[in-house]
Length: 599
Picture 1 (cartoon, helix red, strand yellow):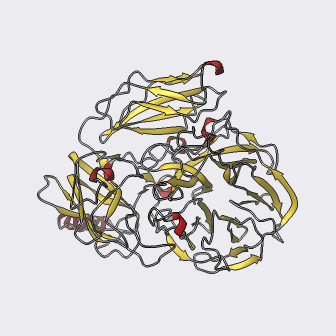
Picture 2 (tube, one colour; picture 1 turned 90 degrees about the vertical axis):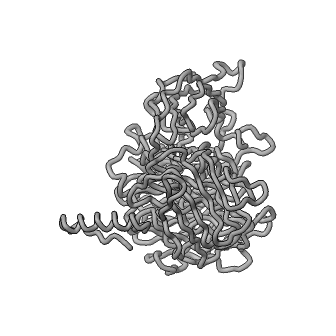
């Protein structure tokens, strides 16, 4: 039963609505209400990898390399291997438009690391290729499959392309490349012919000898491959061009975006001191590289990027969206602190300080708490669904109706939202499949005996692999139980059953004895790595370390669960750093420590 609400409602109407809400919650019916938050990974109907060779360890969903363009006050999302794209009015509810852009069936990947850009009254799309075999498409009505070929082929060819239209000068530029041996390139594109003007320049490359975060490997220590530079994107802000790039590899939690800055679109780019600007090596959803920066309908900036899973294949990935922007000194940032917790949507973030983040304040209530399940498939244990690691998951023995998962919050808590992250176990699909759907119910209980329905998706008709439900009104509960009603394919499996709200106990005290250990000269050790240590806080579920190269610009963050140390391998060799740390649990967040430095 939906809530019918109007800004013109009278006081009596509002009282009636309040009464109906109370009545329906008493009967276990969940009402539809406008959500104020979203939660990463983005909940869209990700397609499955189309490649048999990538499925040898199991078929799975996969996409990456996203770009979002705000066109006609709607958000258009394109990403790799989806045979279509999504659009949204609010950055929460995404509608899929099926469209194969390739004209030749010899390709199975369709759009790979696509480029999308708005130029005047038209949206353009182009997919990665090194050959002259891919058209540039255009549309003035992209909410439907209504596209025309703008130019038959882009003769220069481009992998990981990104087009920047400079509306101030009516000029168009192409930035492209993905390699661990060659630099990215850039050229000006004629806005009429949509072909290169012929002058191509090499862009700055990686410098892992100085930039620790650009080193290859999960811990920036694997030397069997040189790091990759890829995923270019350019944003113009206050007459400066911000050239964004990804490194060191998409299959790592440290996959990040850095930025070079210039007064010119093609030359003299300088490494921004505060790099990487988009970085999320910790938490449930990890990785924040190869993305794009866009403005919402209220003028605020956001950064969309790639989240890694990399279990069944290195290219098993998802999409995340983070608050971003430019500070008063022109420093580009992306705030990923608590970035996989409930985050305010653009409409509700108006006027907020994005440097402080848009975290709702709703804490994770069931980290590593006890669970019960209907069945377990082999070693895919139940607690893998509450360990805050997207790479691990629990699986039931079947995908049949009646399999269930139950979590104990450990205390009576105020539940405000739930995120369900399905895992791919024994799935059967390859490529994009339409008409899929999940169905389930979620029950809540204060004592584990008397239950009421708080989420009813028994009639759901959509594919929701990372479903996020913000309850229209908070619920008091200690136990939550999910009952599976329908899986689109495979077993009933969860990598994260995540419950958000406020606990009823004490939050942690301020962290004690926080130190940052770093070699103070090259001859004494490795300066690209810093070792953090602190006193274990018995009330803490985890910690967030804030870092930066200036005490007033601690824009970087690292979330750490279940440990009192962390090896930060992403430092730039010659620069000084500043840090703070805070502890958190289901009940709240501690005060930050005083700032410490590592010169």
